[in-house]
Image (cartoon, rainbow, N blue to C red; front, side):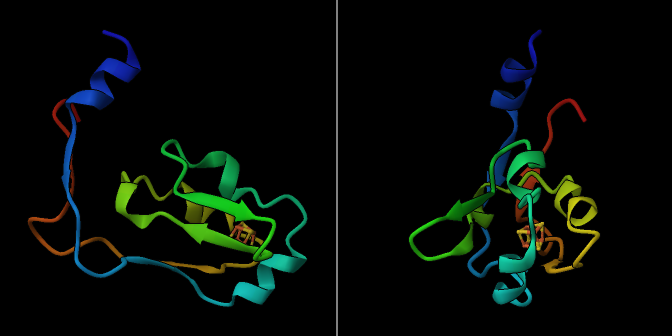
Length: 93
Ligand code: SF4
């Protein structure tokens, strides 16, 4: 089974409030590579050139925590896990 087929089997229940936020949006202006936009497997983070900030699509989060590692230079991402019953449910781990 291909990865895309496995991911399609996962389900999630979207929380009512964001569980991810950028702590200081202005710090992202100093971040040279915006690596959070490359490492997330489901593209939660996007650089908006018009607004000059990271836009967070937290509703799609697969809770991998990859973004926290990627932002180790600035530690500018605040992520908690959604409360019980919300967030991703993996079918095959
Ligand atoms: S990696 Fe961190 S500091 Fe850099 S753009 Fe993403 S959230 Fe901002």
